[in-house]
Length: 146
Ligand SMILES: [Fe+2]
Ligand SMILES: [Fe+2]
Image (cartoon, rainbow, N blue to C red; front, side):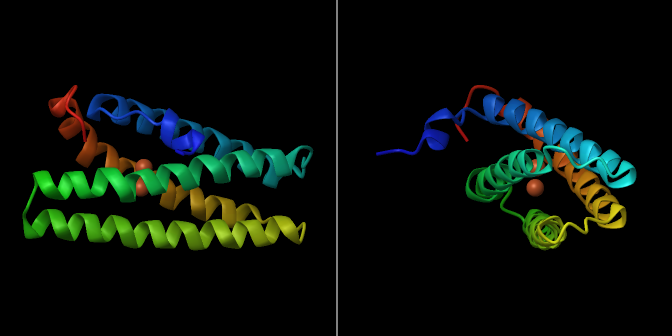
């Protein structure tokens, strides 16, 4: 039986592209919220905010690794494309390590603004590369399945 998340995720390239854009915006907005909290010390509802971030982040990264990256490589069978995707996968590992570090800080009630700042910078740079690499390609694919 399929899981609810696999049922709800879109299948065409255009839908996947639109969902990924939304998720990039959503993640950035939650990170800005965390950043404000880290500076102001306002921690009400932090666990809810953080678990919302983690579920969107995990699903987004997994969808890229399972669907988007392989489809891009099938469509771009070149060493350059392989190197770009390998770099994005390394960045995913770095981002996951930073998420784990922030999760640990939250558990210890010692969240640092500098950790959130570092994550925001890395995540933003990563999203910019993906936006430039994938969305023009997905727009061309239009209604085709990934
Ligand atoms: Fe990514
Ligand atoms: Fe992404």
